Amino acid sequence: MTTELKAILTEAIDDEYKARAIYRLVLQHFGDIAPFANIVEAEGRHIEALVTLFKKYAIPVPEDEWAAKAETPDSIIEACKTGVSAEIENAAMYDKLLKAAVQYPDVQAVLTNLQQASQENHLPAFQRCLDRGGTPEGGRGMGRRRRQGRGNK
Image (cartoon, rainbow, N blue to C red; front, side):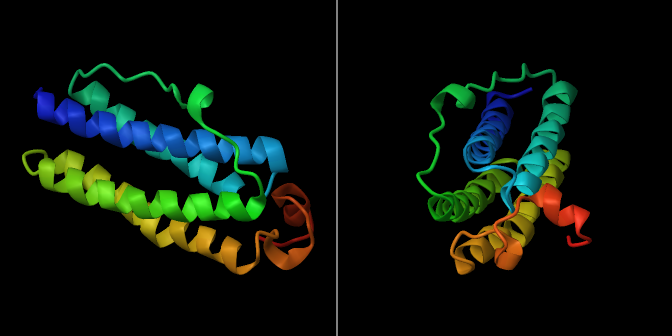
């Protein structure tokens, strides 16, 4: 293990912890709303993918301290804006980390997958949230669970 690899993985997992904490706060404050309900679950999967690398390289997994540091956005529209900004910053971070991880193809593969999920799935979902003015999909004011029960996504 190198100090550089530890720094790469630590920066990546810290960013994923941060996103998950913010999205959890949004759900706690505003209810089970799209796209946060789906993306918070994805952030958990991202964290697990990174934990696998920490274990493979025998690097201690850093504690998630974001639950105590994250702040709840003032509105759903602010939460959507926060999501857009976070995903744009996430992509830039992964660009930097991918360059630093050239000696670790397996790490690059995981980081690439995480970056693609962020850019191809999360960012567009938060942009749609902004386009809807922060209202839930369909504009009905319902959370994900009720919509699923009605045969929608």
